[in-house]
Structures are given as C-alpha cells and as structure tokens.
Image 1 (cartoon, rainbow, N blue to C red):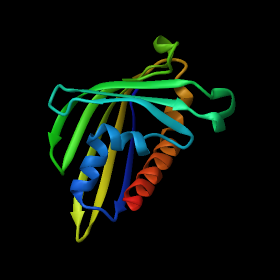
Image 2: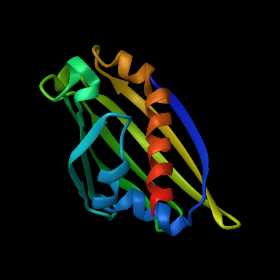
Image 3: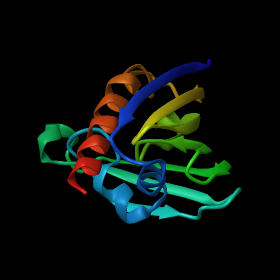
Image 4: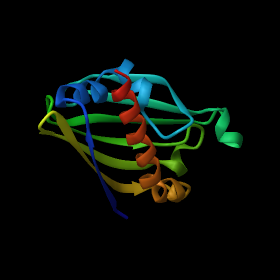
Length: 157
C-alpha cells in the first residue's frame, strides 16, 4: 500500500538557513519531530548514498509512551544545496521493528520568495507493518507539529 502526504509552509528565513536546519545534526536536534519528543541521536552523512539517522524519544508529557524511541534510518538520494534534498528511509518503534516499520521517501524543496522561503515536503509511504497503521494515519498531524517547531527554532535564531 502506498500513501502520500504533502506539506507547504513559508518561513521568514533564507533557503540557506532552512538547509542548515535540515542538514546540521545539532540544529536538527533542536526542532525535529512532533511535540514532546527529544532527539537523543542524530547522524548526518550529507552526500548521495550517505546516511541519515535520527532517533525520537517520547518525553514525560507523552504519558505511557514516555521513553519510547522511534528511530529513522535512511540514505540521501538527492541533494541540491539550499534547494532540495530527498532521502529514502525506514522508521520504526524500537523493540518491535518488524511490525512497526514505515518505508518512505521524503522530498524537501526550498523555494526563495523575496526575503522568505517556501518549504514544500512530499512524503511517500511505500509500505508499513501491521502495527504502524495508526502512525501512518497520524502523519499529517505529526508533520504539522514538526513544521511548527521548525518555525519556532528559526524565529529564535
């Protein structure tokens, strides 16, 4: 089964600032993921075929999910500095990878608009495990929080 979602938002930041937010591990740690998660691990090998590895961990506000870890590992398939990046990856819930895997391709486009940048994201889910249906269904909600956190990170700079 394939599912696709698209997101778009204009940020008061340059394409270069957004590029750094998406490609610098220390910056990613500050905004990645939905609300109430931290990023204890983040590795970026920014080259075609290079590894992207990000682990989200549920915080106390997530109640019974506190401490749950959701790794995502993939490889870059397209890189145009300050313009676009794409990676193919798999995300899962630690401890139950086989049933919670979500296979996806994420494409990120940065288009300058005056002194702002339009961010466009397309996520294509190419398959998922039987216990990942709720995560796939909630993808739009989670990405909304994700992009709101990015706005907060950029405005704080």
